[in-house]
Image (cartoon, rainbow, N blue to C red; front, side):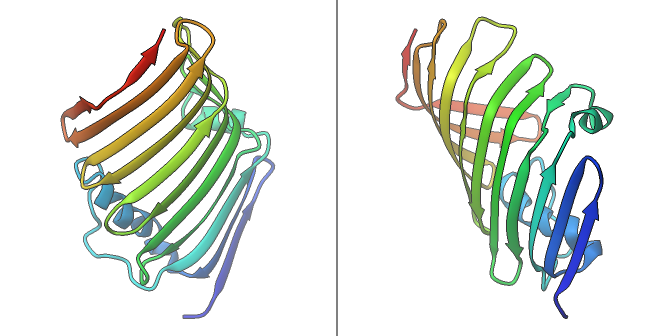
Length: 193
């Protein structure tokens, strides 16, 4: 297996893939990791992909109109950058992402930054957002969060500040996912309204 390069370029985005990979197995490469974190939602591939060791990056330009084709509820995603590495032999997944603006239905979020490090046991996701608002009265000026997930259990820590009805939140919870729902156990949490 030699090192391969694959690039896809358009007016809306540029994507690059470099390393040792089987193109047909790319979706299963990601699914093999994700199924370890949320097996109730994501089924493991029938056969674990082997010898997948690659880096990737995706950069969007004026992407919002293209995003509407995928789902009319999505807005933003212009000038988004996603990069990472995946190695099935060494059991490693890394992801770094940022976007200046994302909207879904009536929820609008600015300055999203995500960093994830995972293996076949768990994933740790750290992130932050700038302004978050919706059609409700809740407005968040800044948030920072950490999620550690493994086998349908997520430990969530969220810190957020707002300027409307929500002044400060320090939320800690354990979320257990099931095929038909979730169970949320709140741990010591502070809310200032």
